[in-house]
Structure formats: C-alpha cells, structure tokens
Image (cartoon, rainbow, N blue to C red):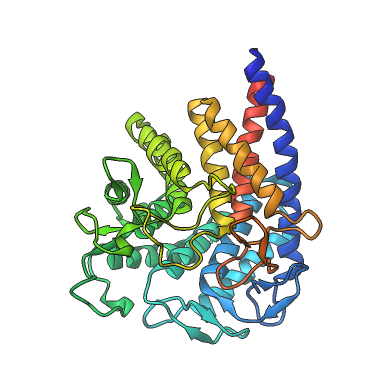
Length: 407
C-alpha cells in the first residue's frame, strides 16, 4: 500500500467518524422536533433548538422528509427503526390525503397545520418530491398503492415537462415561452434513478428514452465553449439575453454533476463520466468558490456583471452538502487526489460554519464572511433532506474507501 493511499485511508476514517456522528445528531433533531402527532406531517420551521416558529407545512419538504426517512431505513442498519418507518408512512398518508389535489393532481406548495392548502406553485417541483416519497415508501413497504401513486405522478411530470405544461397554470408569454431551466431535466433524471430499482414494467414507460432526453437537455446548459453551466437557456440550447440568461448557480451545477456521474456509472459511459467530473463538478468549483472568504457563492453572473439576486454572495447550506457528495463521488470514481482535497476543503468549511454540534442539524444561511445570518434550522425551503442525504451518501462512500484500503 502506498503512503498516499494510506493517508487517504486514515483521513477517510476520521471524516467517516465525524460525518456518521453528524448524521446521528441530524436525524435525532428531526425525529425529536418535526413530527406533528396531532395533524400528521412534519413541521420544518424550526429554531436553533428545535422549537416550532410557524406551523405551516410545505409540499416539497413533506415529500423530501418521507424520502429521507425511507432511505435511512433501507440503507443503514442503525436507522432501521419502527419509529422512522412509521413516521414515513404517516407522512405519506398526510401528503396523499391532504396536500395532493384529487382533480388536478397538483401538490400544494404550502398548507396550514391541518393540511389545508394555502399556496400552489405553477411548477412541477412539489410533484417531483411526491414521486420520491411514494417511490421510497413502495420500497420499504412493498405496497402497490405507493408504486401506483409514484408512477401516475411521474407520467404527469413527463407530460408537463415535455408535451404540455398548460395545466401548471403558467401564462404563455412570447418572451419566456422558449426558456428551459436546469432544474427540470435534473429532477427528471433523479426520478429515473429513483425508479430504477422499482419493478415498473407494467407502466410501459420507456425509461431509457426518458433518461437520454434528460441528459441531452442537461447538456444544453453547457455554454461558453464548455466552461460554464448556465441556469437558463432556450429550448434549443442557446443563451438568453439579460440577467436570467447570465445566471449561474454553482451549487446546482455541482449537484447536477453527481447526478450525471451516477448516470455515467449505470451506463458505463467514459464520456459522460468526464463531462460530469470536469464540466459539472470541477468547473463550477473554480468559478463558484469564494477565493476571498471561502465557501460557495449562491449566484454568479457569467459576465461578472452585478447579480440581481440580493442574496448572491450568501453562503447557503445545500451547495456545500451537494459538493461534499460530488467531490467524494468523483474521487471514488477517478482516484484523483485533487478531488479528495476539494472534498476535505468543502467539508472542513461546512463543519466550521454550518454544523451545530450541540443541537444537531446545520444552520442554513451565512453571510459572505461565513457568519450565521439566520439561527433557524429549517423553514419553507430547508427541511430534512439535503443535509441527511449528503451525510448518508458520504458515509456510504467513506465506508467503502476505508474497507477497500483495509483489504
């Protein structure tokens, strides 16, 4: 064994211990504080110590928490607990019966504590996380109702994304009707991965064609001679004038990178592996990492013009958790020492600034200098998802690295 591989093994063991302990704290935080035993579902507006500061519930985050619980239950022995399975099933009941409209099949963005909708978005993202929740429940219960719900909603999402989105309620405006956002093909590719290990032959869906479509659409966002990932492009892959066309979201591109790397591994595609690592993981780090203050900038303008989003220079939790996954997955794939160094750099930043070792979970929002901007642990957009997902995946990969070096 070389000294370099020995050092990686030793470092991996240290990071594994740190990340496993963090995952335990994080899961405990949500199990203790987020469950609404009276009405069902989960509270996500939680203070630093877990107190509920708003009883609203959010469709995205209900689906995400259900999915997270099912993954913990399936993939790590220590979380195979009745309390986690029961909470996932109860959450699924609340999501199906309260937050999904029986006529339109839309899932509300927000609802009151009792599950009465207060806002419906004209997007398909609440429905994406509905599919993830139902698929996760199907795998841990083997009950057909969940698989049926997942497939029916997935078919609607494909229809809205590829054929006709008029049911989403967005007005057709000549100046914006030709735009494509990176999040849509990204989400569809992630759903294909989610459904890969479900028996869905009876659905008659051509999953190979759908995954190919999603990858092709994602590739359209690679611009400037392959050096930049733009968040918005035209339907035929051209740049859009104005600040929306110049917008880059480094964390989003990096998250997309590990989705593509996962796809490349399944398809055994060297070309896609290279694209995922070099273009979607390494490049966004180069232009997204704050050279002065460290951490990932939230938004970057491709032409270095003033970003219009006032939070552009804030450091948010999820780009860092996604980068932890991406660089660790890249290292495990290519065995490139630079990816290991980037994983350590991002993880060390996260543990110095976001992680709360006393109460559990991560703070979500820092200013540019890395100081906590909001003491909340959750809200309308931050729930039980990005942090535990990253910690779970990183624990799995680090365990493999440690075991491989011990053999």
